[in-house]
Amino acid sequence: MSEANTIIVRAPTALRFKSRKTLERDVQVVTLVHGGGPVSSRKDHPQQPHRDIDQVTPLRGTAIRGQLRFWWRATHGCTSATLTEMRQREDDLWGTSGTYQDDMPVGPGKVTLSIDAHGVAKSSVDKKLFGDLAYGAFSTANLWHLTGSAKLVLELSPDVQSTQIAEVQDALDSWLLFGAIGGRTRRGFGAVHCARDLPPVEEFLRKFSCSNGLDGVPSLHGAQLLCARQSSPSARSAHEQALGAMKKFRQGSDYARNRGEPPKAGRSRWPEPDEIRRIARRNASQHRPEHPVHAFPRAAFGMPIVFHFKDQGEPKGEPKDHTLLPRDAERMASPLVLRPVFVGGAWKAGALRLTIPNLVLSKARLQGVSDTEVRVRLEHGEPASIHPLRDMGDLLDPIAAFMKFLSTRY
Image 1 (cartoon, rainbow, N blue to C red):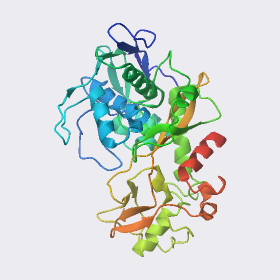
Image 2 (tube, rainbow, N blue to C red):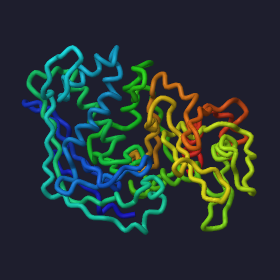
Image 3 (tube, rainbow, N blue to C red):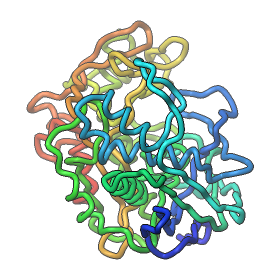
Image 4 (cartoon, helix red, strand yellow):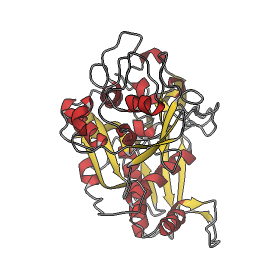
């Protein structure tokens, strides 16, 4: 596929430290952007959030700053002793508009971000050409091409410490290697890339070897990256391959579900639908619960997950569907980042698993006919009864099984 529609952010050719402590990067946006504007265009659906692209500034500095803060936490903030300490370090470096519990002063941080994007323009895309991209996007109305040029500059205040300069550089590099702009970033939309002077991805990951971190804070320390064996001709085709692998692993005909008769999909080979039928005590005559595993393993990929039954007699939720949620929250972001990765001089479909210390995912709650606590974690021997997992060894972790699937079959 052509990448004529990528944004090329033209800046000086290398990251460098000037007398004014200025960091500059060449940047590209190499996949379709999923929304990214600050205002919702309509009421959000849990799996189909609508965020139209910003009509004036499709590349917003506030959005990029938010991404850099996330990757700073993943590289350096997570090494703090407490969440309070991490927040203080983050706000000192990146700024804050809130107050601490002990009423500490607030104000701008030590990093000023500016974007020269006067030539950036947006255009919609042909909704018929998405292929596997539609699986990751959910709402294809949000997808956009961006064209034009821009320049990204980070200017650090004179009192910034040398360690903080290194932290900003790591946040910037990790965003350019693994991050994105807009929505659906963990599924590869709006992926960013630097054409020059980025460290090799394997070398960069080796920098982060902290054995522990803050509970619940996504971290690059100990993160695992696996890529497809075959190279792709472009970042966009690598992105489509990554999403295609996920689609096949979770919903693929004759792999994750039985072969159906279009337009109807075949019966799922994952255990969740049959377990919902058991809990609701309802099922179509041709869909009696038969799966031997009584669990919801796909919760590991993130929640909420919405289950929709179409046939007569099948369990109907309230008001319509059944929704799987974390036991004590409304959402759980996926620890898996799918995106094109530039490795060894070529684009490949990649999967990055972020580390989340002490994330214990054993139970979830199912909303539908009634709120029910359900099991998530698989037990030894159960993967052999789940078709997408049975050839991956006795891996109890569906994310580990998917990463093996991507790296061995693509």
